[in-house]
Length: 342
Ligand code: SF4
Image 1: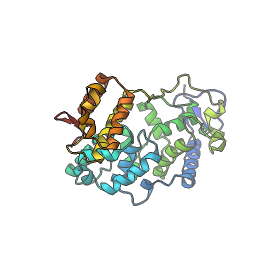
Image 2: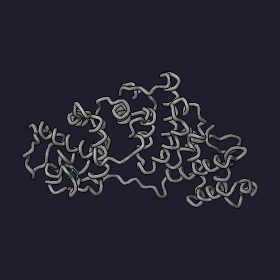
Image 3: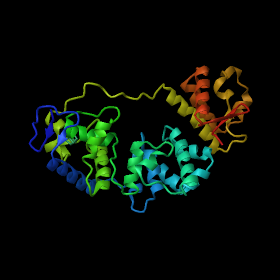
Image 4: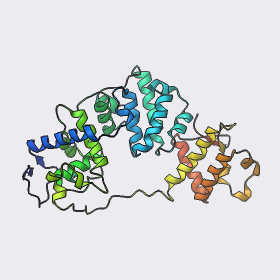
């Protein structure tokens, strides 16, 4: 049976997972979102007209899993330091990781540098324009490829991040939130909402709408210009049966890895010679530790080491995480010292 959602849709029954939506309703949503975006869009630097495709690509990678407010200052620093792919390609990896700062998931920085090398060396320093070409770059998935093709090159693509997915499933499927990741059926369904004209504003607008109005935890339905046609609202905003996974931070390996990386970044900033810090600082008990190893540290690095020790006294666990960091290319180990990779 085909479920069809029209302007007069029944308010009190749930819709199909991806229902067919009547053309007038599609147009209503498109025009509402695009005009809302024209007046409500945040003033983000990578949205300025003269932003390069490379700068857009960097903003997209940085914004994955990191709030825009934390991204913006880092993005500005990066663009000043490495305005083109060739600049980032030539940078020491230690500097790249250091400038990544606390954006989290630092493997993104490594993949971004790998992508920069491919663009600089194989593509004449020009960011590709199509989704297919972009997806061939290291670390670029379907979401990022669609976003860069749309926002940097004006291509008509379907940009489908979690914000967009949430808006669409609430409006038309009456569900609180989308599934963990989109399948082919959902991607094809979402493509139906991308207008022939004004598709860049739609892609940016519906993402922004999900980020500012139809948020995951507290959607502002009272202020929503689509409330009158929203299926989830009309159903009484039923909660999904499954709770979203809350990512724990305190006490996790991720937290401890981050603290070890902080030591390496702090030592890098202090220009420690020889580079990095002794591995023993992490893996030897305080009583067995040669005091000279501590004395050679500058104050900020010593504080960062102390933080690692506060977080965990399990030396085997720390040794395992150090091995993982080295295996991931985020750290290098030479002569018993650990440092950002050269
Ligand atoms: S009415 Fe509420 S749930 Fe529906 S689209 Fe608007 S903000 Fe989202």
